[in-house]
Amino acid sequence: MALDAEDFTAFIDLCSTEFDYRITVYSPEIRKEMIWLDQDYEGMRALLEMVPQHLKRLGTLKRHVSVYIIDHDATAAIATVTSSFIVTHTDPDGVSQLFVAGTYYDEVDCRGDRYLLKRRRAHLETRDLGIGSHIPI
Amino acid sequence: MENSAGTRQTLPEMPDTHVVSGAVYTDKAIFEDEKRRVFGQCWHLACHESELGEAYDYRTFDYIGTPLIAIRGGDGVVRTFMNVCSHRGAKIIQEPSGNAKRLTCFYHLWSYDDRGNCVDIPRPEAYESSGLKKDDCGLFEVRTETHLGLVFINLDDKAPPVADYIGAALDPFADSLGSGELEVFHYNRAILHANWKAWQETNLDLYHEWMHVLLRRTQVGEGSMNTRVVKSFENGHTMGGGLKASYDKYKGMAARDPGMALPGLGPDDFFFVDLWPNAALLARGTAIRIDVVTPIDEKTMLVEWRGLGLKGDSADVRRTRMQHHNQYWGPFGRNVPEDAFAAEACELGFRHGAATRQLIAREEGGKGQDDGMLRAWYAEWARRMGRSPANPTNAIAPD
Image (cartoon, rainbow over all chains, first blue to last red; front, side, top):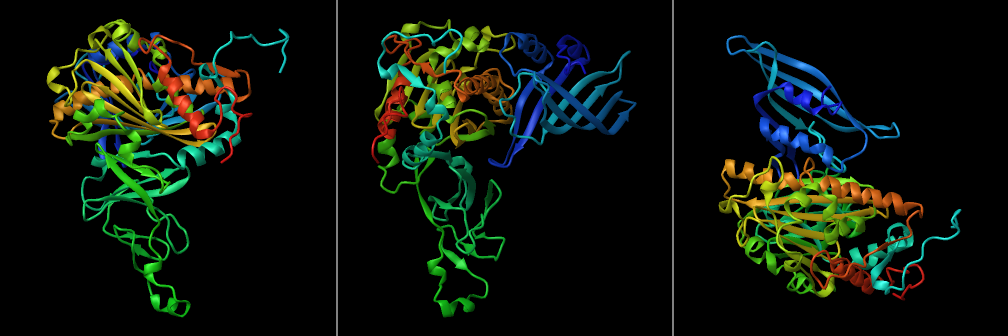
């Protein structure tokens, strides 16, 4: 919800300092796995800080997530979470369209007072992203 | 059209070379002419040879609505065929890539080899009475040539060889693309809602770097505008060179490691070549980007982006090279989405006539942010189309 609202400070606050984020996608054209965005905690923070200065697609993105599997390792205090997601784009005239579909593979750090997102792999099914996005999925 | 102001603004007297009418983006007849006079006659960059690395590797793609398949034969030669069965016309291979010694149509199992020969027809005896033989049923071959590792096709059998067509335009890439050490690590494609030329213009327009925060931080202030050079070549190809980048001037980015530079490139180099009509190659020290734009209709285009690195990259180096590439050029990058936004915004201006023309009138003596690449591009368009870009609907030349 923080990313939906483009409240990037709130999103970063939900991430561990060990945060490791990637958007991955498989290309059947070149038969290779690709990484389309690859950031650590500091990299993601810098990237998001710069977003407001950029020319970007108008409107909003909304992420709809269905959690499929939660595997909690109490000893390691890590939860691995697999979720399906779709992201819709709503333009300034209120027209919504599907932007991207994929799967989150997350690791959540459960050691402290609150859970923090330690690792996210956003694997995309959608490969045609139109004009693209300055904001992570 | 008149509005409450009575008339639109008037411009000073300028040569036709400095103005492009909005009709070149919107007129259906002009687009149909482009399909025939431009895309029907010019070399088209289909893929990089690394996409067809092994014998019998194939890539399928559509070109101006025509399904094609490029396949590396057992003899190592890349050939391209119409990807349609000689029997009932069905598209034979649906997947974008693969490896197959035989291309077999799903419908009635007619099969073709790597040379396009029809090699199997189930129960052929029933064709004996009509005289039809396998030898009559090969795939239609499309002219294919490879240059600096780039695979080109041409629908016109009378066109000059691709090396002659390109001339010296790709010389700046001779050490990198010509090394044989590169491979495609990034591919994505998107349909954009604008005339196809709007994408080419983003790669020909040096002045638009002001739009990009990333380029304002890393590029505009680097070096002198006087060290930049705009060149034009025969057949409408152009080049912008002499640019440098300081990557660490953008928050979150770091200077490039010289050890990661591609053959023939310095880590901070930036230059680009536009191959007329629809391809652009951009070099940024540690990665190369190749754009190919193909129109779908006069207001819709397909853009393909490729990223190239070294075949021998370790996993760590490849990951860093991908980061370098994607910071600017990936679909979540800081530059390409902005270019796409601009192309679609111009389409909104031209589509219903609110904008009637664009200006390509910057003159800086072939340096700085000169519009010389755009003017050279449209000079070739005028030559091929027999129309003036400034007044394209009134100047129709005979075929």
